[in-house]
Length: 125
Image (cartoon, rainbow, N blue to C red; front, side, top):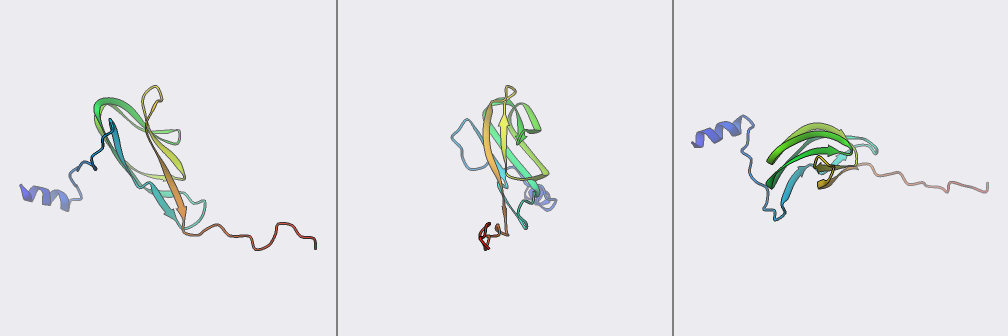
């Protein structure tokens, strides 16, 4: 059996290992939550992935800002990943009646800080 796991690992498939213990009824793990870009006001383009689990089956949809990305029906676990371009936005897991179950903020930071103005915006001369 160890050869089976080695074969999966070499093919880029890893077994799903539960995240750290969570005492809440619904928990999730989102990665990445922070993205760093070269330029200010540049969108982050990266593989966003998440997994969630619940003690009871639920039907819910994943939203980035107000855009629906994926839905699950009567599930206790969910996994999702996709290459996305995003800027600072909220990622939420919502029920059919739009009640927010889970929420996290995705942030985009820049390597180049905002330029500081060297002179006043006004002048007498």
